[in-house]
Every structure is written in structure tokens, then in C-alpha cells.
Length: 544
View 1 (cartoon, rainbow, N blue to C red):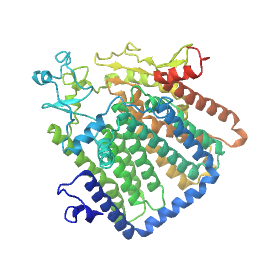
View 2: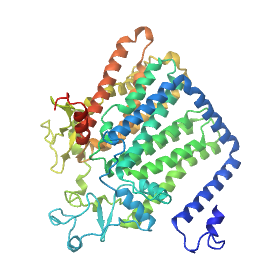
View 3: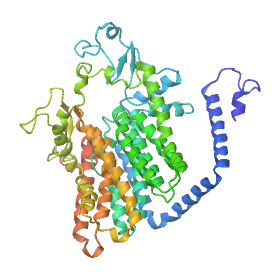
View 4: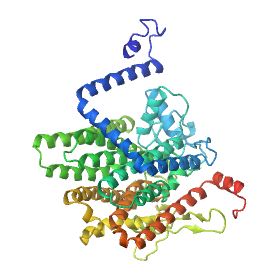
């Protein structure tokens, strides 16, 4: 196939000497098959072990068939929410990544949008008052007469590969939906791995409850199914979290083996490079995880050469990713560190307030909004709504800069009360207590502690980054909720006592999980007016 593509015009397959998309696709597919053959030849034993492991996993499904059925059910619910109850309605309000992908196909890095001549004539186009009345795209970067996006380019690269074979436009909303499904499947796989290894002695309902909670609980539901505002923001956040959690799964399954797997670490490095290339702020929590894994590898009793190979397998993809991202920024803005945020056409002049975007002055106010801002209850369906975030300081000892802005938001303690279980591993470590310690030997507890350390560190660093930012929005919780939800479920499992004394604990967990799912679903409905109308139309007895 690769040869046919190269010599297509010579052997009469194509009448044109230039390379079209079909010819390029045929060549790439042929090269892909060749590479797969070489890899299989070189790593036959490892690939065979993967296939055997896959067979064992498939054989284990009958004992956990409910996990599979629940996963399918959650995906179906996603489809229903995502299509506003119409199943086939997949409108997208923005096509930023689609436009960037088509720019890549045309060998350009700017969006295929022509600026208004009035915008080009302005001495300072970044002043929103100066460009009043001029039509400009929402939240784009403007530099030397061209429009750019400041979000990471990785999703656009994926679309570029797809558009080689498939021509229909793919909006940011459809990307969001795909990434959300991926996050759920990866999180479920990670929890299934942890449960089978460390908590298999618990009742199976604890696993089933956790899978449903992952899919349907917490304010992440808003990010996943907010039909009217799932735009480029959500596509970037969910895409980054998909790659981040996938890398976490690969890294943890590598580090918790008796012999640390270098190729799994390489996969983790590739996935984390893609995560940073989608959302650059993830470099902070990923940097912490790299440090933790480096310390872990250093303490293993293997040769220096083997440790070096393991660390190189993890670090090399990230290094290549940083080089590529630096080149991408330099080619657009002349700086390897400039993503385009400085040149953003926002509702305020960001260049004048650039030093105020991140500040410790926002910490207390953000902490209140992200944790404690209450939801609004009404008598009409769906009974709960997001309340406006609080911009007025709730303590007198500090002030909030005028730059600060809060969108409607619901605090985590209201939308995901199950999060209180995330503190369980911390207290278990401090007070040397673990209800499950009689079932886990010392070496396995060490592996579990590594997992918990990585989850705690990545969550706290990502959440700390949100606390420093001048803008509060429900979508930003998507940067921290996957790790928090995973921590909360592990904490719930870790604190589960023996069946003889577990009834009260189980009741509390069931109530908090049910509240998290119910509030999450109702809030997701409340932010989708089309879905609210559909529900009232089919169920007219609902108060409205």
C-alpha cells in the first residue's frame, strides 16, 4: 500500500503527480502496518504477554459483568444528555479545533478567519473599548493580523489525522463528548485495577456503587453535558484530563509491578505530553508525578542501567513534547513560552492586567466559591440551579482585586458531598489506621501508598493553581474532579470496615453517593434549556 501510494502516478493508479489526501492516507496506513510488523517482530514476547493478559481480563468479565453493563448504561445516559434527549442531535456552538485542523492541513498555524479591516486599523486592538462594535471571534488571540487559539493544539492534530479520511466537520462539543466517554472508561479501568489488587475482599456492591458514582456524580456532569456551553473550553479541559488520566493508568500499572515496565512508562510519558499539549497548566501536577516516580524508581533494587532506561522511557516523550510545543509557540508568537494568552481578545485588556491573572489575593475567595458556594433550590423542575459566584469578600481581613470575576458555580461540598471520603487515606496515614490493612500485606500497602501520594499531589497542585486564578467557573472543576473522585472512592474502600460493623458506614456512603448523583444530574438538566423543555413535555406533571 505504501509503495502503491509512492508510485501511484507511475503505475497508472492516479493521473496526478501531486499528493492528495487519499494518497497520503494510503501511504500512512501502509507505513503503520510496516511499523506494527517490525514492533511485533522485535517485541514478540511482550506483545504475546499483553494478549494473554487481555484474554484473562475478558475471562474475568463474567464475575464482574455488572461493571460492564453499568459502563454501557452510563455511556447511553451520556448520549441522551449530550443530544438533549433527541439521540441524534449533536449541534456544536463552536468549531475552533476544526478550524485549526483545517489550517494544519493547509500548512498554516493561524485560524482561517479574516479579521475585520477596522480591527487591523486599531492602534491597540486588545482594548475592548477601542474595538467596540467590531465583530471578532470570542476568546481568540490576535497577533500580527492573524487569529490564533491559545488552547493546546493536540485535539486539532487528532482532527487533522481524521480529516485525512473523513471530511465532515467535527465541532468542539462532539470532541468534548468523546473525551468525556474516554475519561469515564479510563477511570473505571483504573479503579477496577485498584479494586482487584487491593480491595477484592470488599463486597462487590462497593465496586458497582463506585462505577455509577464515577459516571454520574459530581459537578463534572455539568462539564460533560452542558449542551449550551460545551465549547472549546470544555473540549480543552476534558481532552487534557483524558490524556492525563490515561497516562496515570499506564504509569501506575507500570510502577506497581514487581519489575517496573519501561514500555508502560514510555506510554505514560507520551500521554502526558499530549495532556500538556492540550492544556499547559497540567505541566505542574505532571511534574510532581514525574518526581514521585523518579524517587520510586531510584529506590528500587535494580541496576543503574535498568533505572536509567526506565527514567529515559518516561522522560524522553515529555522532552520531545516540550520541544514540539515550544516550536509551535515560537512559530506563532516568537516565544517558546507564549501560548497566546497575552494576545487574547478578552472582555478586559489582559495586557494591562497580565500580572494580575494569577495572584494569592484570590485564594480565599476562590476557596469559598469552589468549595462552599451554595446551589439554589426552587419549586420548579429541575429544582436546583447554579448560583452566581461570590465576588464580595466574605471576611474583612482581605480584599479582592477589581479584576476578579465569578461565574455561576456550585461548591464541591454541595455537588459532590461524597468527596469527604477523600480525607480517609490522609487520616489513615496520620493515625496509622486502615480498616483494610489485615487484607493487604506490607509490600502491597507500599504500592497503594504510592498511588495515593500521586493522586493527592496531582489534585492539590491542580486545585492550588485554580485558587490563584482571577476567574472562577464551574468548568474549571474539570481540572481536578477526576483525581478527586478517584481519591474519594479509594478512601471509601479503605475505610470500609468488616461486614460485621459496616452497616452505618454503608448507609452514610450510600446517602452521599446518591446525593452526589442526583444533584449532578439535576444540575446538568438545569443548564440545558432544551432538555428541560423536553422533560416537561414528556412529564407534564413536573412543576414548572
